[in-house]
Image (cartoon, rainbow, N blue to C red; front, top):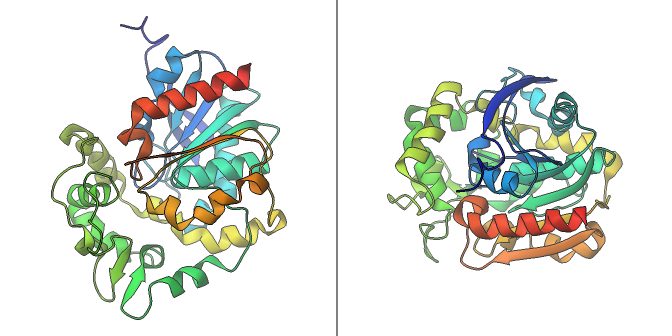
Length: 328
């Protein structure tokens, strides 16, 4: 048994532009800020917190605004990227730290990247999980996503745009929907080649109609699912979905950073079976230009989207080795 993994986990809330941000903290040492994605909470880092603490770091996993025990602003525009970045800055300040390594998964990867891009003086290194970095710019996002589906189906990001639409599908059976969504993007339960793609919705249909598996993925226990479901049953899913509803605002807000690289030391970890890495393979290929401080990029064979939960030991090893090299 590790010596109390340095310290036990503790929950606390701090003041932030969102109002209140809940975080889980473990360990002492240099600050490592962990940012989750959709549809998760700080609980998604449950296997990383003790490992990072044991390695000599102050590991802090937040509930992003709109999730878990953090505040849930009512306005859709309160979930724009600029505001989420300022929440991260507020957490660092509230913890009386000067800087931090920021690591994110899924939407958290985008939030971590934007934090490093906008505040390099605070976020001196960045780890990106599952979703590659692509610099701001290009066509308007909703125009791009609107063209992806074609006449018979709709891309899930477009499906999430209209307030209330996805909520009407998810909230009557949060637990069942989450189970299906997690399974659809996990290596051991995702659809086989040729089966309907769960990233698309048939016109007039629901996303859950594409969830083929009734089996939980190996990384997700019934108790784990209860934790996630309990949080979203309490808070609803509107705050989480509002992140998608700000993509055009982000495109406008971040226009001054069009094409900008992230120059700090960086790390990318992805699953080889994750659509995020296959669809965005060009972004990964561009890393010598867009992430000139990249230490390493790893695609884990046989791994899906939920990388730090599907492969916790491997991810912990890669993260702690990278962090140690930063200190050296």
